[in-house]
Length: 91
Image: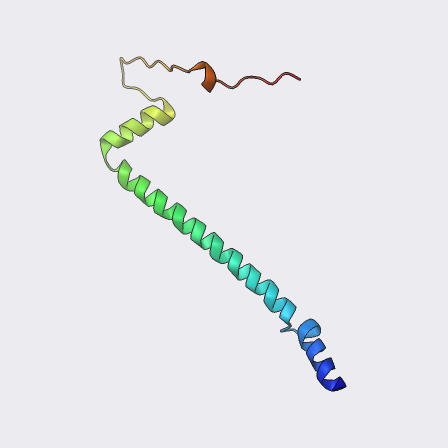
């Protein structure tokens, strides 16, 4: 009986293939699978964005909204509401 208990303790805690190491590796695998799923969603979003940007009208709209680009002889006015402006915190 003592040999069996020692064997089980050895396999759980001290062996190179112990339960603790397997548990740690399983948690690493799960974290990596979650990362892979996240990055796959990001790739899908980027692919849809690239497909959307193939249209020159959409590209122009994006450039105007994101980078405030304009055509020659054109004026752009940026209107900000009072509630959209960040207020400085008083200390």
